[in-house]
Length: 190
Length: 293
Image 1 (tube, rainbow over the protein chains, first blue to last red):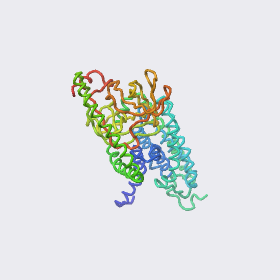
Image 2 (cartoon, one colour; image 1 turned 90 degrees about the vertical axis):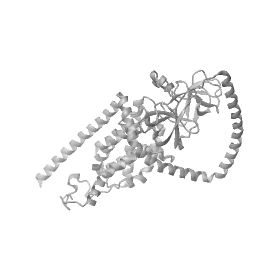
Image 3 (tube, one colour; image 1 turned 180 degrees about the vertical axis):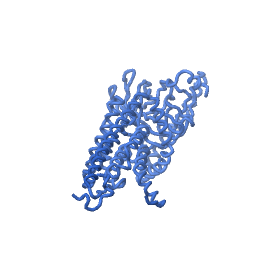
Image 4 (spheres, rainbow over the protein chains, first blue to last red; image 1 turned 120 degrees about the horizontal axis):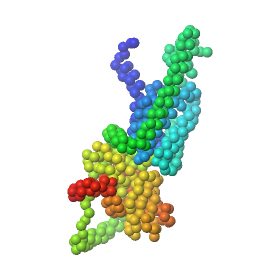
């Protein structure tokens, strides 16, 4: 292996650490006392958006165990008495798995389809968290605030997602990740 | 070439198998975390406090610029209505001055009557001022994080006040952080009384802007506009802290109370150290509480 310069190494470490750092930042931002109407209510769903976007762009830099840890942290920081610890972790892991499984259909399609994908997964995430919280605290929780959160985060997605990570159609498309880096022109063009 | 392809296919299958297995493991781990959280509330409490203490410095760093931005936005908004605001304040000031005279007279009278009756006043409260460094407001919880903790003398159950009235109570305490549960949270149950009629009641939050009042002794004549204050039942709260105002009367169960505290602009709050730990820690703690005064 070629000896890298300091800058190149820093660059590589930075790229590796970026998704985790951004996710952690949004987890902390969930608790920030932002007083912007609508926006502050939607903060708890933003980590899910970050997980979705990075799973789409660079899933290898956002491994499942990290999601588990950050999800538990989010639940510990945010949760009220009796709320389930780990439900966000479960949601994050499932979002990542769903995105990774369908990545070849989501990468390289118009942005609208990625948005629709987020709408579906975001909805499932919200239902999951709402359901488990209601079950764990055994109270009928008013679903309207959760739906409001969901509605706002969906509107925010096209504004925020391109800033977080750009999803590039990597050519050639639909090539297994292992051989992607070494593929020669013509080798996989069938 | 064919051998290489076979090898690649095999490794690919192995990888997908491993990935599926990893997913199952992760999902299992999340479920186990949830079950542990349900079974062992003491452990969860400790973990929460630890997480709070760890996140508190970072939150404080975020909170200051956020507070500055919030203030700037509020200033801009107020700038447009400066004239009306001024007129309103002048009117309110003249009204309050009249009240001040009345209050002075009553205070004097009260003092003299107390002297006559040899009335022993309850323990005096001391205050701990705290900055709100985080909101824990979501669809499921209404609360806030403070930058003071056990080291400053905060203990669970203490009342948290804003300038306008009661905001909530301290739920969890770390070394340098604390979590407040607002009165509007779905888990909040507060012993209160109607200031005008002295009727005792329980004020319950439901995660919305209005709280529900459940009367204990019937519902004779609670009207919109009645002030609700803490009753001090249970002992952990001082008596007579304003909590809210009845906005809708009616039958039991349909009475709604609007809190005085404005949760959308909390920046600093006061934690009341009343010296009584109340029913939460009875036993040796009560004598301890009296010793401090």
